[in-house]
Image (cartoon, rainbow, N blue to C red; front, side, top):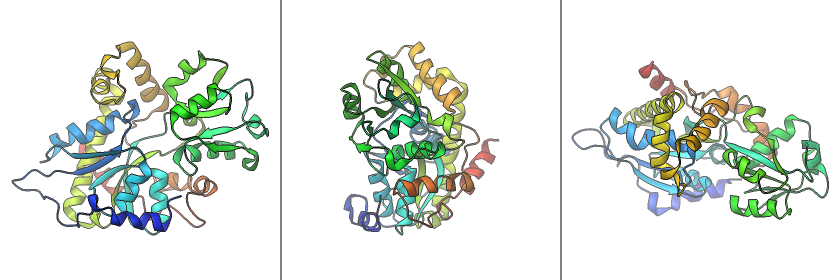
Length: 342
């Protein structure tokens, strides 16, 4: 959980402590936006990357962005509390936690919708959700209180599983979780959906949970800004422009496989992405665009939908009683961007 102390400590991160009002503004000099984003660029992240690195510069008088990537998205949120970046790709739970701790942050759009993770099970031990309550079954996640933990708890809550009987342990990154699963030390782990076929070839493993089939709405990563920064009308224009870029990228990614394939090869940080054949990329695109519906248009940013996640966040220890997204969701800039493109 992002506590008040952690949230406010971000103000001391000198590398990002530029005061408000000192940004380059519009005029003869192109504006260089400071953007922070996830270090991982999977297929689901491609449209958001194209939006801020290419399409934005076609919409307004912007120079190439000043991009910083971080492995842990909760750290991105902590930095944003201090007011350094202009706009960030943050994980939804850490933004909610920071505001719950006293920070002034706003969610202005989604980086993508839903989630591209599945939960793979060791079928020798787990064939149904109820098996997760067995005393000798262990579920491995990255970090307690992160978005993956919340996704899992929400599914268990939906199906009436007694969470107190589910043994959940933190195992760090995806490689550690995969090794533990293959060694039968844990029996359920989150993996990227496109890895499901590969893991099935290595033993008696099957996908037990597809979150996009469990949730009518889920938000994993969002475009977020500092509330004080957003008070400047020039910065409000920036948000509309970024949202327009995201919507245009979503439209292309959803309707144009060739566009997605080219941009995937360009921006994915998979070391072999540039050499992926069309059929492999098409499988990824079909999953994301047609099954998960990761890039819908219009992009949902509905307060009531976000607040449905609050009980799950509370169960995961992300926010306290009484928390809500009421002061966090700011949909008007996304709506203006949507009206621009029709």
